[in-house]
Image (cartoon, rainbow, N blue to C red):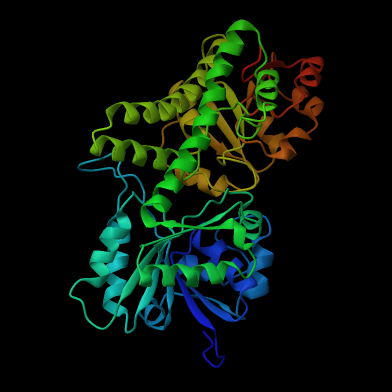
Length: 457
């Protein structure tokens, strides 16, 4: 890390994952007078950020990192040193759903967050602005402030909430041109002053009218609420897809008609096998737990049903596959087209493909999985799971000898394959189960496929 330049600010991000890495790369690119340091305890991940093979795939990210790395963007494992040097510290550590104890299955596991807060307190030699970038329960900032400022003293920490609103696959674009940037602070002179520091950082490229300042609790809740609303739309259209199949309506036509209502809009009304990713399920369950803790039972139940409907959609998809394949999958080869939770990312966290593949394996199907970016993660996700699984980068080879194709990720390249060639190499009658309504179903039927799509007869 260079120290010869007189930097306007030194910014640190603790956590080099899907949020921390891209966010800091954009800050470095748009704030060339700021020194930006990304620190992680995982030395392999830091080494990957310093290489030509970044640890995550995101369109445009490699170019952004190449532009800034070594100039004013630096990656390190030296957490104490970076904490001592930084004036603004973003905390972007993992906050998964608890798997143990009270709140297991719903509450956020804050052990990594608390450990980080204590490390900041221990290593800081001057006052800092600490920014919550991880998605956290409402009023977590209060707990962080208590840990950081316990005992008083000359060093003071001001805690801000600055949630991320990135969509994987478009994260660089979302960072470059965000709908809004949210900065939550304490309603005190020092809190407002700290918030203004962060506003000035983002104002290097974000129009001022898109930078919203709120109290810290509103900022924390806004992140959970935004993800809950988006997931709710997906579960809503998926609930209607079941009714469309039963009534011979077409969910695509229904979604188009509904989405043309200016009060509703068309986004997140694409029926499919359900939402995935690191945020939606985790954040909704966190919201459910918070509601339960405040005695809001009916509110908790409402949001919990959004997750239950998502699980139902995956099970319903497998049930349809079993029924179409003569009520047995034993020994049948199924080509899985796509394992990432969405296109343009290699991320498989909470991917619908994981649960669907496990259900298919329980039916003793033989799976061949293909995905442009996610095969390594797929191997980790299914490691040790009983059954026959092959990982094949070539979709043509994956489909060869298969009884059926299950399309689970909307990679655009899957829509341009030569399905005549694929059909000729499959076991007849050959089925396509389009879990994303991506393909030309009329053309597939002309080729001889039996086509089963979400929300269509």
